[in-house]
Image (cartoon, rainbow, N blue to C red; front, side):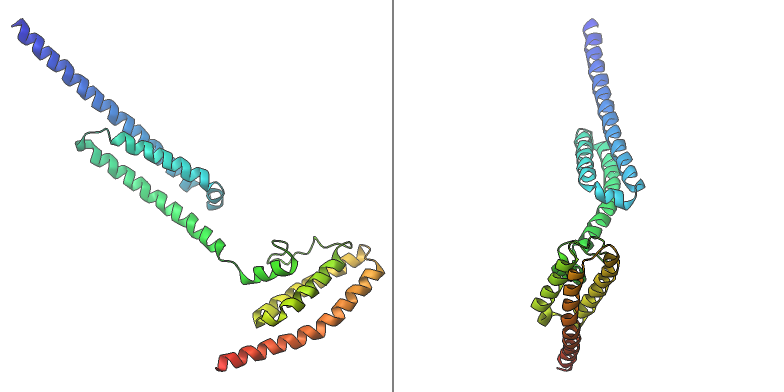
Length: 223
């Protein structure tokens, strides 16, 4: 009798231990999943610019939390594992939406604006954007800027399309506008004379070349 009681007692203790162990593993898995879900909540709550700026850290943290959650549910029994996995799948689906938004935005940035390529060719990478801001041009570098502009134009004018010529015109006019400001800041008469000479050579050349580009494109369109 005593042996039977002892036997059943051992079985009971083992059973309780197994249940306790399973409950603890489920509790750990639930906490990991809750942490993952909370993290995705936080990602969705911040603006897209901030998310993009910190994307490397965000994606790394998500991958780590996602792996921890998957590891935790791998230790569960089949009867509860399915429900936990479904929760993770739902959270992952939300994360994929954010990830796709970031990747799409990044891909658009990689599509280089042909006008920006032209600006970079004339003035150096990143110096001039769509705002045509020439504030970096001053009395000390304005002559060299005009000369570089003119030299670049002469070297590349045969490759320009009609749209390129339109962009060149905008850059030239913006540089001229900056010159008006620089003149008031003490531009030397010698540099001013040299700039006038460059402008004198550029204006008729540009006019003829632009007309030629338009005529060339019209002919190509007929073919």
